[in-house]
Amino acid sequence: MMIVWSVLFATAVVAFALSAVSGGGAGLVLMPILGLILAPENVPAALSIGTSVSSISRIAFFFRNIRWSIVFRFVPLALPAAWGGVMLLRQMQPAYLSLLLGLFLLGNLPLMLRSERGAKNSADDGAHGMVWLPIIGIMAGFISGFTGAVGLLFNQFYHKIGLDKSEIVATRAANDVLLHLVKVTLYVSYGMVSQATLLVGGLVALAALVSSFGMKQFLHRIPDHMFKQVGHGAAVAAGVAMMVMAGQHVVAQDQLAIQYTRHAHALGMTVDWRQHRLSVEVEAPIELEVRHSLISHGVAPHFNAQWHDVRHAILHISPLQGAYMTRSE
Image (cartoon, rainbow, N blue to C red; front, top):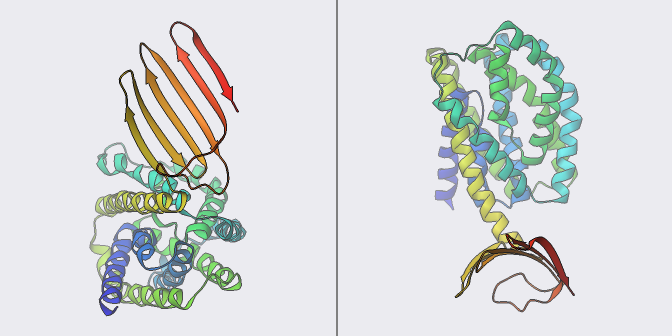
């Protein structure tokens, strides 16, 4: 077990160091790793404990760089939105949202490959971005309450407002610290913090402190274009990791399965998800058949299990007969 804690601590130190260089994202980088140690519903609480300590230390180091005008527009609506995210977390697994967040983070790939030419921000962009700050606060608060981290999701927004790297680090910390503390309080009050969650969160918090000590000394040496590129690269890496981990959770909890079939006059693919089966089949000469089966409760959706179809809905698409639907009970 000591090896697991050592690996987690070392990874967290690297993640928070990377977060310092990129302006955030340690939580998103750590989410897939914490998912291997904790139950999915406990990961957000552990992340919030660790990242709240990180935000407090960054405020201490970069207090003079905080843009308070942004904080006052961001925080008021972010806090109640975080409560909504926590409430949703109590009702469902975060795996599907993690898939969407992973896809969103992969959108940083074009930004990472794009040259700096033409990427300058105008004063109009900054003024327009300030108007949208309350909406960004709502989105960030809700997603953060649901996943425990938001990090790099809105970093591009800070760049568009015109903040430099020190201002991004400081202002994000000021925006996030109250958010994380409110979330930790909500997680505790709803019984979502176990002993393992406290241990993991405390270890992540210690790693955040260790990383913060060296951050003040090295951040000013990093060129602005590298700051942005590292942020985009970290977002892409976190997106891939989140999609892989979330995909594994979806397959396990919803018994997702895919099967391909091939017969003499037909090719088909069948997808099972929870109590649904979707079959797509191409029949000779040229006809596409799409079948949806709703399975009775209590029957596991597995290809080797005995299926009991409640009803069928079959869509036929043919160049000769057009599109038509048949049903069977």
